[in-house]
Image (cartoon, rainbow, N blue to C red; front, side, top):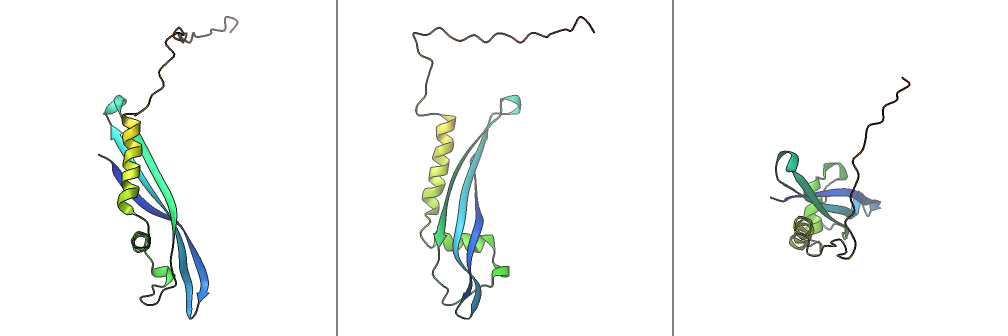
Length: 128
């Protein structure tokens, strides 16, 4: 199962906007996804990510002072100002699916002999 996690990485703030202070005008966001398949030594973790920015108009009402902001509140602003949460999560999910089951692969060229890796041999210092 894919786990999706949204984070706000940075906020750009106008020190003053009218009578308000520390007004958020831009949020840089990231959507990360991970999925682990298999168990034990066979476990593999796959990941995908999308990132971007959302800009906001100066607030007209319901101003939240900067120290009182929450990440979830700012994410809500992003989603209501053009960041398509569903499409971004679908993109991250597809990135992971393409790693688990690659739609395109690059097998070895059929006319070249396979490369054989020689085993590593221990070197013993006889003078010691």
